[in-house]
Image 1 (cartoon, helix red, strand yellow):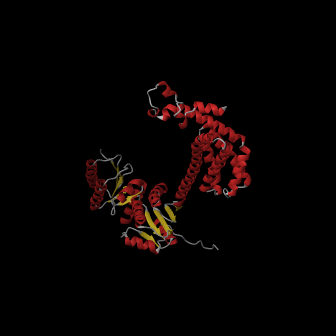
Image 2: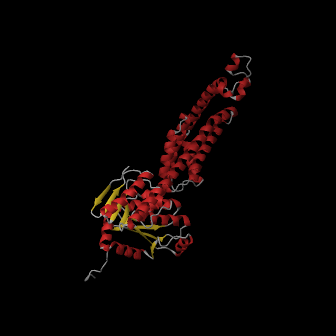
Image 3: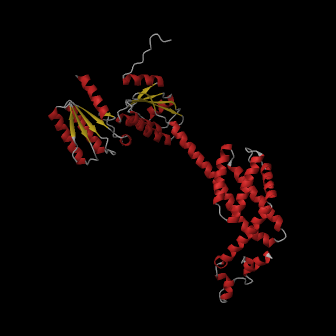
Length: 326
Length: 120
């Protein structure tokens, strides 16, 4: 009986020609093709899709247990989510399935989006990859579609209409989950980058008025920009008179970064601090000479120890051994 | 805008309190050199803490002030250059190579006192 109601009320393309359109019946002179289909059939079509979706959702709920198991089975078969145990996979599969069906039913995706982000937050640290997440969602889509084929295989028209209703919603769901996952990943990456940046240029006070800035690793342009800001601020906060910048841990730097370093030294001088650069590798020494740095401006010492000793002299400290100590 | 110049012993302290026009800076230059002569000061501190911008004219003129004052046998120290200002100056090549600088007023005075002791 449901089928009959649908074919009388709805306005899919094949029914149009037989005059099922109420608008054209009112105004006999109008040709059907002058009226944009969406306008005339919009309300009816949307309603028809909702009805179909409701039918679809009912079917998915009825067969929930078996479809879910099949999906979990295919996930294991495809060797996805290997980082998780079978029980975990089944538990998550249940929630995803229910959210999927709910999204189809309500045609809203907020809950699904929130769940996707929440799920991503939990599984990304476990090492689950993007292709796995996209893979399982597409598998579910496939499992559900096949069950629809099985159910409506005797009625091709009905199957077509059900798929018309199902496809856009299913695509949107796959999209939502994949995008949610990727966004979460990007958020984590940004967070880690920020953490690395913060760790990477510590300004340490080792004596009154003496700061040490140990630089380790690669200085990319962003870090090179951050360096003078942090150092100058540190000089002001700690009222430093001498700063030792140690670049033992830096293998090489390009001319831009080297220039930044020189500018940092000059700017520090304007704040009344002397800068000693220590630990220049042969490569960096070569770079500095090549870019024509005025070595008179740069106070350099071989290693950090030498640098600290000179700094202490500049500040008027003298380190003497305690007589009688072991 | 008149920059107040205070006397503290052998030292003159000029505290710039807001952005200065070119005319103001020139006026400051004149006022300082005259005051150095009148008070027979041995040191001058120019405090630029309140400036968050220092253009080429300002920086060149301050250098001139320092040179003029040195010709009178007195030492100039520029104090309170803000980190952002310092960095911009350096990027624009406005380094004050032959002018003494210090972090703040306290440092500036300490520096001058040390210099006076060394010279006396």
